[in-house]
Length: 106
Image 1 (cartoon, rainbow, N blue to C red):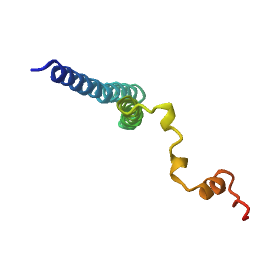
Image 2 (tube, rainbow, N blue to C red):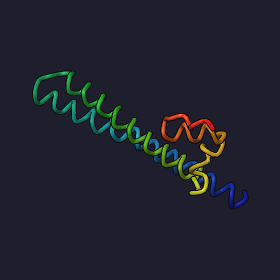
Image 3 (tube, one colour):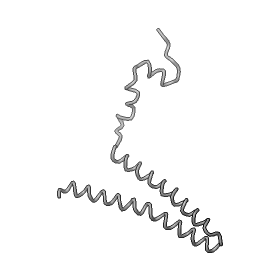
Image 4 (tube, rainbow, N blue to C red):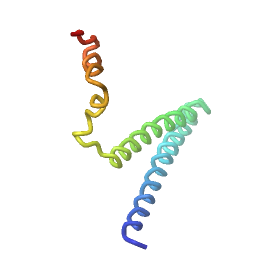
């Protein structure tokens, strides 16, 4: 196996491992905390379900953050590419778009 393909394999395994514990860890912790609180307070199953919902919300937030960083690292934006959307428009559209007012006709 070539070194580049070996490196890609390890990167993929690392990502899979990281996603696995990002999903499993909050679910287990919040579910167990909810179950413990239900037993202590006698509110079975409401705090357990609340813990599961909190785990799902926090996991979603963590995954969105992880994937946005991953996408940003895969497609780095150069400073010269940041303002390309205005270069596509014709000159008259640039003026009207920048301040919301149509340019004066000559």
